[in-house]
Length: 242
Image 1 (cartoon, rainbow, N blue to C red):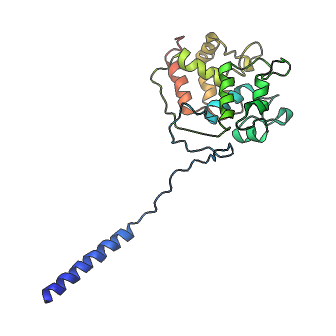
Image 2 (image 1 turned 90 degrees about the vertical axis):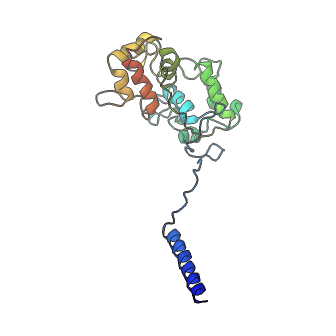
């Protein structure tokens, strides 16, 4: 009987020791990542750890660069000018300008001016956007003008001018840098124009926001590190026309 009592006490002490150890090592369970977007186009930046969906349009990655390059510039729709009260420098400014109706491109002023047949009303005033960009904006509106973000990874395995650099230039630079009135005198509508700024160091200096260079995109945030890495790889390879 005495031995049984001792054994029971020993067992109880062991159990209490385990409980005490577990309690002393308790950690707060982290909250699951929350997507700030509420699905109605009024949310925040979203959860960028979510893999990208090829059927969804992502504002900061796909729509904002088009607006910054073609519309949000001095004299038009930057914060300082705000032509017609419209500022197109960020998601919140686009939504607050009242130029998009979620789910309804036909009732959205933004889509209307991009597809206008009257040249006096067409935007941008220096010529229509490429149809692929207009369709992307149309799809974004149809999908509810949401502020989705995602993790698209960074594939730098095959950086070519035609497949990677040219599309980057068209989306994020060419709106300001094309034709006789190109910003800073940089006409990036041709390979030769891009190669020239690659050779003289202005391309990398500007996209990296280095001292002594005009930061690009003008008045906007620095390009994603992945985009800068692609430019760097192409320039380091001798900026081939491939």
